[in-house]
Length: 340
Ligand SMILES: Nc1ncnc2c1ncn2[C@@H]1O[C@H](COP(=O)(O)OP(=O)(O)OP(=O)(O)O)[C@@H](O)[C@H]1O
Image (cartoon, rainbow, N blue to C red; front, side):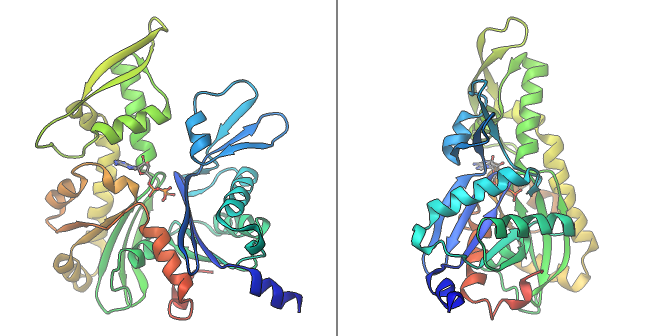
C-alpha cells in the first residue's frame, strides 16, 4: 500500500547533473530547473547558504565564513557530500514538496566513466530521495535531445561540449558505436584565459570574469568583425584595480590549445569509425550540442578541419536534459539506452 502511495505522489524526473549547470526535467512538464552547479556553504556549520545562480555570483566574493564550491569536476562528482546537498536543494525547489516522494530518476553521465564514478551518482540520487535511478550516457541523451535518428541503421555523430568534458560519439541502431570523452571543455578555456591575462597582461581575474570574457569575445576561428572587450581585474604588479582592452584575436590565440584538443578528438572519431558509418556522417553532418558549442565559429573551424558539414543543435545548452527527459517520457521505447 505504502509503495502504491509513493508511486502515486512521486513525479519522475530526468537530471543533467553537469559540471557547469544542472537541469531538471519533470515528466509531463518539461524543464523545471536550470541552475549553475554551485553551492555556497557556511565553512563552519556546513549549512547551505545559497545554491545555483545566487551561489555562482558569490564566487571570488566571499568572506572568511563562506565557501563557494563547484562539487562536480570533469563531468563527475568531485565532492560527494556537497553534490548531495545541492541535489536536495534543487529537487526541493523544482518540485512542489508534496510531489517529492521518492521519484524515479534518470541521470546522465559522461560516456566511459568508471563504475565507481557511476556508483557515486546513483548513491547521491538515492540519498537525495530517488526511488530508482537509471543512468544514460550524455552523448546518447544529447543525440535524442537533438532529434537524431538514433534507432535507425544510420551513423549519427554528436559532439557535446560542456563545462568539464567534451564527448564525441557515433550512434547507430540505438547504441554507441564509438565514443571518446576528454576532460577538456568550457572550464579549460576559462582557465586558459585567466592564465594568459595574468602572464601576458599582469591582470588577475577570477573564474566568472574569464567566462564573461569568453562569452563576450571568444572565438575559435577568425570573425568577420573582430571584437574588443574591456576586462577589469587586479594588477599583478601593483595590486590595484586595473582595466585593459583585450581583442578577440588575442583570446583566440589564448584558447587555441583547448580548442585544438576538441578538434583532434573529433578527427580521431572520424578516423576510428567504420567506413559505412562515416559515409553516413559525411551525408548528414556532425551535430554540436552543449554550452561550449556556442563558442563563436567553432562550427566553422570544425567544418574546415574535418571537411564535414557541422550543424548546431537547437538550444544546445538543453539538448542533454531534453533527451534524458524524452527517454523518461517513454522508458519502454528507450529501455536499451540505460547503462545500469
Ligand atoms: N555563448 C557561449 N560561448 C562560449 N561558451 C559558452 C557560452 N555559453 C555557455 N558557454 C559555456 O558552456 C559551458 C557549460 O555548458 P553545459 O551547461 O552544456 O555544461 P555541463 O553540462 O554543465 O558540463 P559537462 O557536460 O561537462 O558536465 C560553460 O563552460 C560555459 O562557459
